[in-house]
Length: 59
Image (cartoon, rainbow, N blue to C red; front, side, top):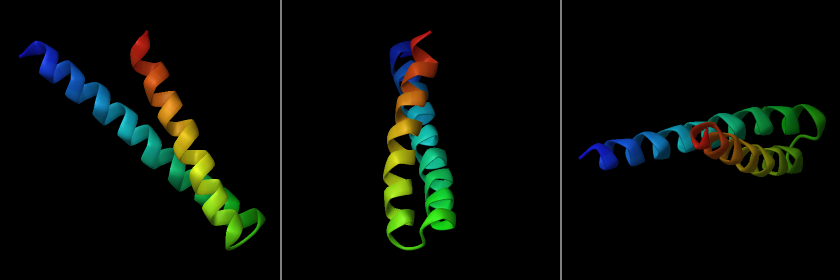
């Protein structure tokens, strides 16, 4: 049971990082280049947020 809770917590942390990163990336992309910048910023943000979330629970 403890392993299930740990896995769920790790998944939630990674998902939260991806969503937060996507939001920040989209906002920055929109500020720099509306339209295409929003999409590109979102994708970079999701990638960065996911990696940050994974890194946070590896320690």
